[in-house]
Image 1 (cartoon, rainbow, N blue to C red):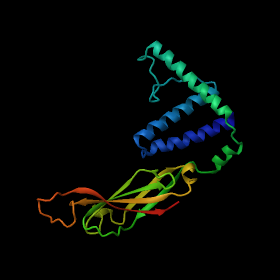
Image 2: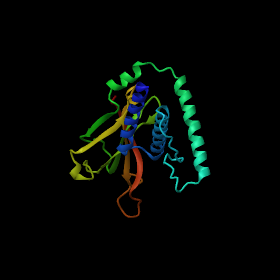
Image 3: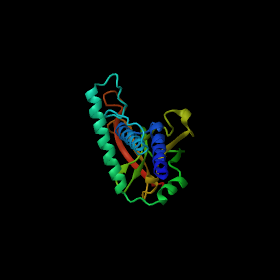
Image 4: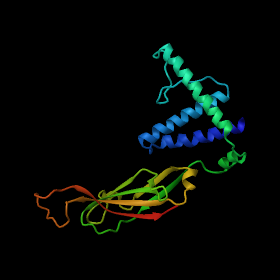
Length: 219
């Protein structure tokens, strides 16, 4: 039981760091909160602690503001979920060395990126969106890092010159086990509809149009 609780605590510590990072989109944040509360309720059950009833968002129900019938149904639903969870955990054949491998490895990892220069002849302002990409699953696995680049070949915020740095945080062991991870840069041109148009007022200005994309294997 000690090893079981220890493994659960490592899961909770890893998920907690992801929640505190503030980098998760809303849908992933909600899903992760539900995983955390489910893990906590399951741990309380196997340790024979009190059962905590929650609403759909994982928040603890207030008995002063919730009816007795609603509390009863919430208890019943929580008990059924935990019972099913216990059956699932018992049916899994987990090797004993799993918990030790988790202890010896860092729960989360980070990737540090320093943007020194952007060389691409556009002729207008551009927005650079940098993110981590899994080529096998064709999906982006991180938030975008935005750099606004001016038409003269310098960052729009000139004080950010030689100071464009970003850290992609909370890369777990699952991410490191991917076959490849690419650092992808999407380029968006901001300006006229057509570069051949003049700068006179009769033409549209400030339009955002895809211009190009580049990538490099980083992990």
